[in-house]
Image (tube, rainbow, N blue to C red; front, top):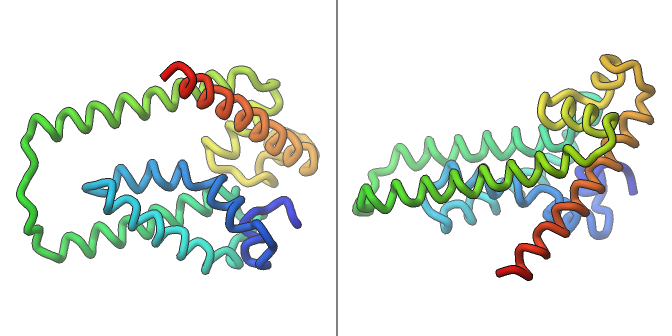
Length: 184
């Protein structure tokens, strides 16, 4: 097994697809929900994105950019294609009441803001090096090589900081999810 989930998917490693789903289903779902008119459409879109992702996994080049950037680029392109196809078909569904649409948008924005707050809090708890590396790679979209060049850190150190930082964030988010489930 490699450090790369996508390279493991491309190599048909056991469990790689499950790891890919666990790692990227959240961001892909969030993006699909923004592009889609309904949850059902978003579910279909997510399936299409992951099928395309698994077919394209062998094209992933760790030197060209981060895995999340590759995943989200494929997701965005697939969702744009779906939107264009849908735009060519006449929409025969009745329009929802404007008040319902406004409530849905407000609810989605509130959920996104809450998710952003939770991730920011988790990022704030990271070591400074981990926060810097993750900020440059995830937020700014730099490859590990580019982060290493810009920070002067060895490439292996950058990768270690990224991996450890992501593991800490995942652990903190899992705890946050469990505590919010317990309080519900």
